[in-house]
Length: 147
Ligand code: AMP
Image (cartoon, rainbow, N blue to C red):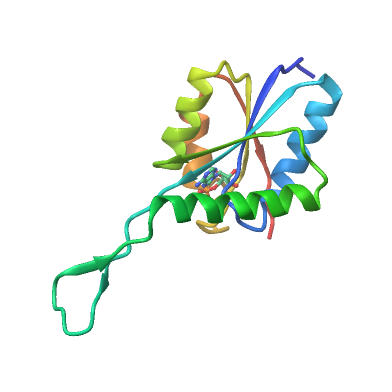
């Protein structure tokens, strides 16, 4: 197997995230590799309306709260898997763009994604997996998700 030095694991916080992380970690263990986990928050603000207000938006979810929630979920998962030596990156934006940009800017030599995530198991490859495969500057490993 290629001697990867810098692996990026893309995680969408779906149930399949654990499988994706496990497979990436197995490769990293063989090669003594740097592992980074990235999650993109592709957030379209939810607009709430106060009582009696017809069109005036009254709140959105603050970015800090979204980051905190994502970080808590990732921490819980990594604790459960007894993984501590990962860098965790949380970005706002479309997942494909954020994953590919990070890989470009940080000399990533392998990106590990699930074959599909929250966006449906009917496709052989989900939109993010497909986008990353097309635009990545490096190898991409798509972990087959069957559930
Ligand atoms: P999808 O193609 O969106 O069904 O998801 C396939 C895989 O892309 C997931 O298993 C993750 O590895 C990755 N992915 C999807 N959404 C995100 C996200 N928001 N942040 C990071 N990785 C993601």
